[in-house]
Image (cartoon, rainbow, N blue to C red; front, side, top):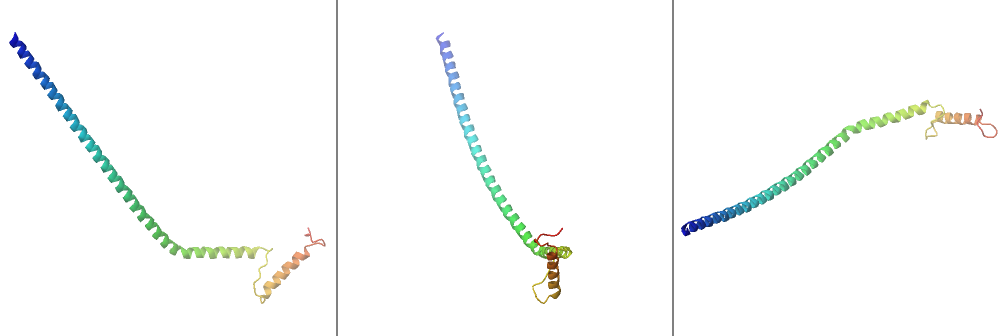
Length: 141
């Protein structure tokens, strides 16, 4: 009986040693897995930071290139469109003169006193205005 108890106690001791050793191995594996997970998280975070910085740099580079291209295009367009804008301004000026010429209530005279016809037109227009006023200075109806 003592031999049986001794064998049983040795077996229980071996079982406990095995349980302790198993728990020790599990703890080591958990610690190693946690360390590897932290290392992977750190590596992933560093990778994301690096790629984000690269994206920002590329975005800035392409934005600068885009602005340079737009500026060059605007410069070329401005030179090419100068003639068109001058033509449009000349046409607007001619249209204004045309409308003034068609307005019978407007007389156009020049700056020179030698322009006899223009001076006569102005005098005639002023005479018509004066003839349309009554003795009180009111327009006749």
